Image (cartoon, rainbow, N blue to C red; front, side):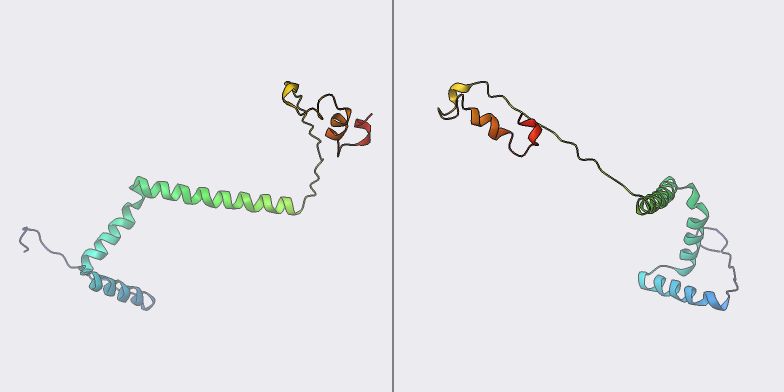
Length: 129
């Protein structure tokens, strides 16, 4: 009997040859951190069996699935764009600003017909007429 008046139970497990390496690593992990191996195994089993009950783990799983879904969507969009022909039409935007306070302009700009002509520089010929 232990000091807590609880009976200690010992469990023996058979381990396949391929799993012995993971057990060795787990024992090494426990030894390095000063963890009792049996407690480590119990905690790991508890975590594994109750992980679905933890809301943060559920949220992480949801987000992991969402990221995977979005990756697939991006992949599909990339493939669609690679196999598509996309054309763009150039739209012309004209911005004109009328000067309201002509008194502040230098004299050579006031009522100068060339200012209007030069302001249209770079536009098509039809806009000059």
